[in-house]
Length: 76
Image (cartoon, rainbow, N blue to C red; front, side, top):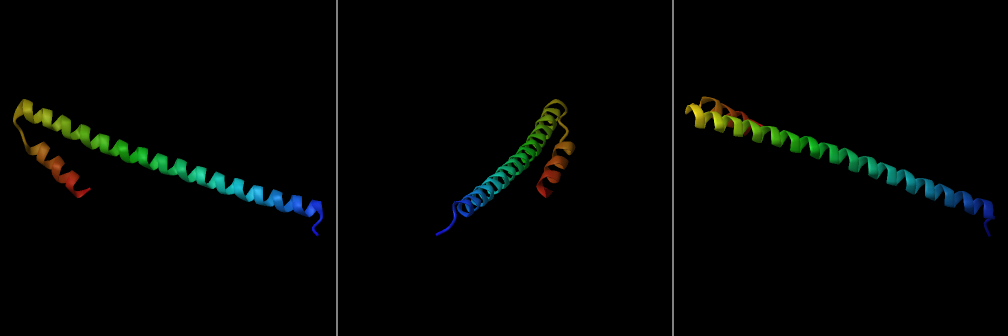
């Protein structure tokens, strides 16, 4: 039969391992959340660029800038 002190040490080690795993998962979730926010911001920037150039086209009739942006976006 194991001594109570040894059992407590094993329980403590198991608890510390679970806590470390939880912290790791928490950090991974935060990293992924940040990456997703950056992607969303990049998409918003592209959308804004398109809207501004579409507005410019409507006001001036020039397609050069708009077509250039579409070409740039198709390469990304």
